[in-house]
Amino acid sequence: MKSRNNLIVVFLLMISLIVPSISTFAADYPEGVPAPNRDCGPTAGGTTKDSITGKELICKANGTKNTWQNADGTVVPETIAPVPGGIDQAKETAPVGENDEQWIAPDPTSANTIGYVANENLFFKHQQSSFASFTQTSSGTITAVELCKDASCAYNSVQRFDAVLPQCGSVATNCISEVFAKDEAGKAVSVKVIGAYPELTPDVFTGDASIDLPSGSVPLLVEIASKPHAGGTTYMVRAIVNGFRDKSKNQTKFVIENFDTQIYAVKIVSGKFATNSMSADVTRYNKGDRPYDNPGSRAAEICAASSDTKCALSYPLPENLSLGVEIKFSAGVSGWLRGRVKKPAVTITGDAATGQTLRMEGFAIHVPSIYKWIPKSPLPASLATFYKDGLPPTGQHFVLSGSDGTKPENMITQYGGAGFKDKYQWDEFLAWLPVVGDKATVNPTFWNMGTMSNWDDQANKNNPCFTSATNLVGIVTTNATQFLEGPPDFIASTGTLDYQVAAPHFTPTGAVFAGTYDLVMSSAVARCLYKFSAAPVKATVSIAGDSASQVVTTFLSESAGWLRLGAYGFSFSNPTIKVKLTQDAAASTPVTAAAKKITITCVKGKTVKKVTALKPTCPAGYKRK
Figure (cartoon, rainbow, N blue to C red):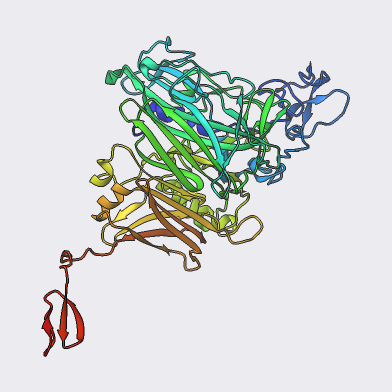
């Protein structure tokens, strides 16, 4: 996979994917239609019909503004409509739902507030297929947007896609070829494919192998009957790749940049939900707005994926089940992967020039999330220092309407997806930790593996051991909420591979949160870094920056061209994990083959003795026979 392109359209499209709908809705209604408690304009007295209940609505004064209200006098509270299964998403409470996987960030309950949420689920759950063609000026201003359904879309300046990969069959590459599972003993567990997600999303598209354009589809559902979760036996797999082509660079074929794969434990339920659809409104892209039409209901936020009428309701993943996905790519897989699994394993087959098959597996882990709304003034000391120059730029926060309809509230969304884990977000996370009491809000399970963006990989970008590698170099996985995007930094002065992580010290129940860290590295790259021979390697692990940290378990193994190291049980808040590999020095003098000894027979009268030596001689008084 290639490194991320810096085109302005790429950045804007990434914004569109990482910001889900978190607007305040009167109830479970599409955006913009009359609904109870919604603003009905400056003039009271108008009437209309409720599009869902059929009741008569009347525009009445409500505090400082006019809102639609039921003409019969019944009151509709400003909450999200219940979801089948008894889930009531009341906006004032957190956490909400049956479990942490169904948690959504509540809206503010007062004006003049600032909020923060760090939860990757809010990013991953809203990924879906999209394909767009942009016409733009040399300065990067977008003048036209066309939403594409196939390769016939006009290629004027730049085209960009996000493709949820289909199951292999009708297509032979850029597809999911297998979903598999193993128990803790490594024994295979039966997995049955159910099929594609029940309903297509609006922006699915047909690919074209001749220009390396994958087909953009919907997630895949499977059943693991012997390994049920709290919601049943259904699991959902979503593998998504993104890429672009730029006419100014004479690119006729698409460049696949990055990919990401997620697995969820789900239950398919029916109801009124929502799906996003890309907008063709040019002005929204140029000002950095969310380019979505009809963002719909917040009820969809508890779904791992949703359509207008179906929801893949999220549940905790079993932690004693190693889940795996095999993907056929049309391009080679190179660089580093990062993930949210424990004990990861990968195999790669095929040729980088013509395409490779990547097989990934690992156990699900818990990743803690933090969330908080606080008054804008006065800010706590850590935040006042961090935001001394103002709030984050567009793309890292967005504005919600205040409770009085006029004063905006700022929610800073740090999802951590798509490589946005840079130094700014790292420092911002640490500034918010004391504000939330160094304690997680929720602690959902994750299974995620994908490309590492390497945006801040300064320490390794010129290291020939990394840059000369044409295949996959390694994988880093951790359950830390925050980490600096990129592989471990090789520190030559100490001979250590350093990796920074951060998370709340405590879980929502108040227990100390135990960290996990796995490093899988190409044996060839590791030996290049340390100038090792083919002899066995040893490893030591230390945790710096947190005096309370203590590694409970570590392991190191080497097989099939991979070094595998794991460290489990250390505590947070922001330790640095240091891995040092060592190897016993080789003998300085080569060992020669042992000379052959000779045995002779010696006699003295009737006494017989045998003497064995390199140059044997008979004792005094004995004669050689």
